[in-house]
Image (tube, rainbow, N blue to C red; front, side, top):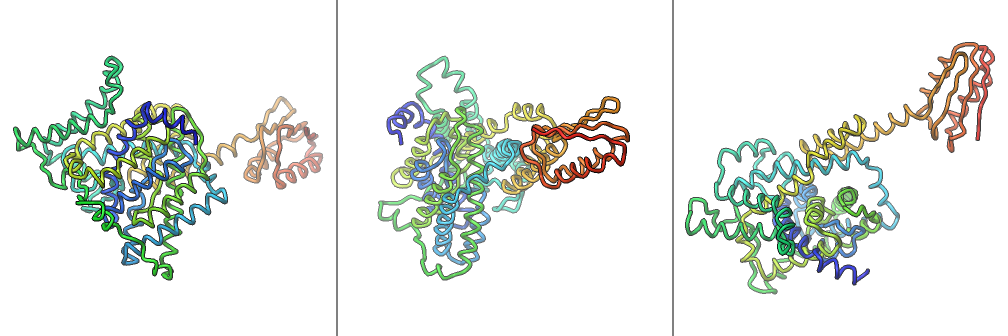
Length: 509
């Protein structure tokens, strides 16, 4: 590790992006733990380990890890099935071991098989979901946890759109003012900072939070009808500990007796596969957003995630993945290296040990404005315009991925989008592997690239249509690999062509 580089990167601005990630991660850690039926500390432990440990070990400079909303249902069902959160921690530890094995046997390459149109669709879809899910929080409708991203909502049985419509019926003006001001600051910050250079030294997200806290306190004294109160409903709600011993005693440690429970191993395998796929997809997406276009080691990422999950399980934390919401927030806040992820982990630790009473004064509405800004950046209209200009074979899987992610959830969107994307890859290869040119009675069949059995029917049809009396030239000079079925088909055509009055010639390298 180049300590000099990371020290400079930290001082140059990674501390600011680390604050932005921390402010987004804090309510997400709490909300995901709450939705999973786990202790609140479990979400914070996972966030701290994801920041302080996995960021340093990660294959990526900008990927940020922590508890993932995509695992919420799996975790909740697993805890219910085992009847013990302490027993579930054994599955988290075993999942980490499996991830390390996957990394050591070089399974990280799986991430490279996801089409770029699907990755871009995933990023835009996550942006849209963030916007749709955070608008209610910006209006003061905080009944659902701030990190919920599934279409069907866990807390109240509603879905994304019904909750959005319901939020318009009971707008809390105090929350709307705070979130609107936060958005205004974020959208104007860069332009103003270019003119007032001293502003570049300040993190915009921290200013948004400070203004949110000050405004809410102002409402308490001068406009009580707009005051959001100190309730857990509208505010950050960290557990408050009197001392370090009390915080440590709040941790749940693994129950090793569950090693003999066969259900633990099934759950561990499920967690390992799903968490690994989410991490690899997030890694691909982070690379696509990285202004420097750095290529990370996917195998190293799996090993880092595995070590993180073992550590999280041992300390009573939720399972960890690389999370695109945190990672994209990091990038849009100006993060340049893994130091921003590390800073966010340190701040989460400080939040638990030293600052809970102060952080609990932060309205969720101002955090919603930070997420709304991130969502806008991810789902910027220029992304649609760019993909649509690349042709229907790109925008069809792109739009399908968006529709399924928004209408179902992330994993289904990736699965269906990838299947559609691969079908288009097959169609493209099927249709463009060879061309037929005809000039009078001369016919040229020219192969542009390698040929597989998928092209057998197309080639048979092309050979069948060659008229009697033709002179046929088959050019395979550019082919490095030819499937046995294709080679046999060509040889059979050449050997029987004279029966149809056709002269056939094969041009090799």
